[in-house]
Length: 102
Image (cartoon, rainbow, N blue to C red; front, side, top):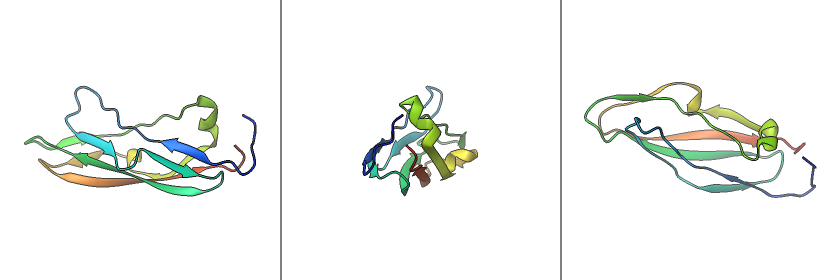
């Protein structure tokens, strides 16, 4: 990818879940704008609508694939399993950074 000075990058968030996952899961914002080198927070909400505890783990992908080399998740709930108790709702956050070399 070619570096473009003074570029504003749009990072979009989604929350796809496996058919067997019983959580309600969504980003609190669908897009943030950052400049290369900037660190930003992104928030998600997860809710367990069932009467049983449910354990899940998140994964992520970056598109276009070339941008993935410049995208850093500094802190993320997706680094470990999360358990939601029956009817529990939790807000999670990601601390992300787009390297200034992009």
